Image 1: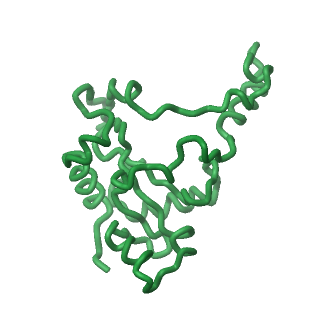
Image 2: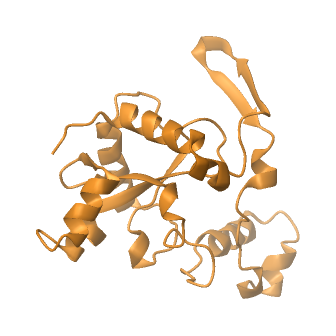
Length: 193
């Protein structure tokens, strides 16, 4: 297996897709309306005003919420917390957008968290579909796609989709944070978010 540097591979894969004919069809916004401002202590603030207009629609199941949750009258923090929890902790719904529906061109590469390595798209296909060393359990448990965000805020804006085939709600818990830290170990960029 080729040793690839995560940061370099992410930048190059993202750029290649963004500048390709497929990318012209996939990406919903570019950087024409990207505004940058240098702040104190080396921070950089940016806003891409085309982002909100062009991103995939956020799908919140307001119908599943009770009328009390919908009203959210008063300043009761407990009530606000319960509303937020119902919105954030929605069950997986295969009828709504999920990361199993993305165009295969959006996938830049994969990460194997057990080996802490990058798996190219070609290597992934060879590994999973060649009949040799085919292990669907490994695909589900250890190899996760890194996808280009098609409504990017800035260049290389990407999505790590952990366990997309298991149909889990998008919630971060302690076990997911450990997996994210494994991905961070692949990067040499101290401010990877």
